[in-house]
Length: 171
Image (tube, rainbow, N blue to C red; front, top):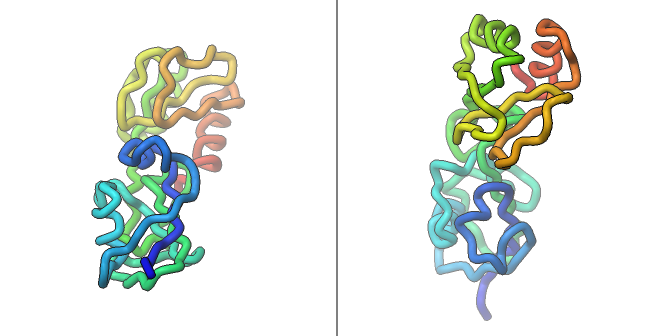
């Protein structure tokens, strides 16, 4: 009898899977003596882009052996949640937020820069890859969907900073 796990891969990691396996749970056969890292490699997922793996709902290390029958969830870098206490894949989370803001939010950008965050100016229709696009609620939705986008409801820079810190758990 073939050993399998039930897998669910999230967000941009789905790009590495065949279309029939994207954004849904699917069964995957296990090779003998497979651990979490081996499973990720067998799937073709880049281990360096995985931030959190849950096995039966619990955070797992890369070396954790799999015996078959487990439910495995694979998550990429979290921008909106700090998983550093939960991740077992590496010593700390991959999360290192960088912000791209349009010109009208530059007062907020200056505050973020003062806190040590990388900041750059961005046009909402040309979001830079790997950066979190921050826009105001009144800004039209970008024509090109960025990988990470946050629309702020607050209108004053100090309130925008509080909203951003709360929503992204920045502290």
